[in-house]
Length: 356
Ligand SMILES: [Fe+2]
Ligand SMILES: [Fe+2]
Image (cartoon, protein in one colour):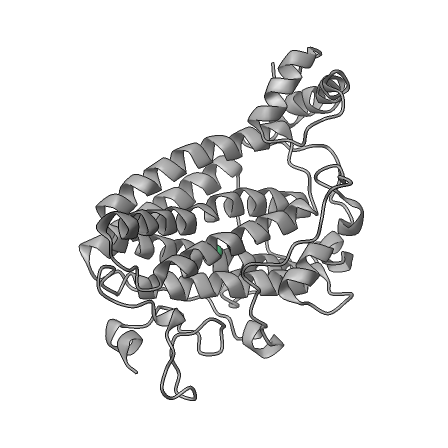
């Protein structure tokens, strides 16, 4: 099945899943056999989707996802993260933009279908009133999520979330160099969004090792989603940005629920766990920050993506400048920007976005 004692098969499998180059494939093949074969049989009995390595959630400072290489160097970030204040992050709320056009309705229904299918396959259940604050997670009967299940969900969703920004950025880049026209500043924001999502993923990978089945699921999902989004973006960029706006609405809900569960004492391992070093460096978090604070930053990022994509879906992609990269005459007036100082949950209208 998925495990093998053959060094050749192990080598092929590790290449396919993008694993770090092992020192000896023979040794890796034994590891595959010892760890993944038993967990495959075991976990299949209780879950339809995703088994992971049997390693517990780990203190992030000790876990490496790849062997440390002697030639590794610290590199400067191309997109330094804007600083968020605690108040700004606490003010993030769940929000929904009404679907007013056919394009919006297609995007919203696509997200609803994807979300309900994914929840069904992964056995995810959660009381919707918990995220909205109508109820606390304490004593909730619908709660079935553990730290490990949250990790699996975060890793899978972030591996998908990193796709749209780069697809859109790539297609706009190609259009610009093909049509010999300027892009009006959209590309950088789109690529930065993809980079930000990848940082979310890398952060979670410092806390949990996905098993081989999970890795294969990520590869399969990326193969399907990348190509589908690529084709859809060629047909209707506006619908695709709206789709991402709705996707980010769901991401805000997901992280709000996770934070509510921590606050209700449902996730004790998260409560005591330090945020990984990569998170402290990227978000410029204070030393000693915990996972809860890290999730607050990530949720704020998702709210930013929600605003950006709902706004871009309101604009004319061929004509309008990117309002998030524009200099405004009066900086005190609320306007689209890089941080979350003037966050507009359901996006800026075209008139607002293009005003000076
Ligand atoms: Fe994310
Ligand atoms: Fe996002």
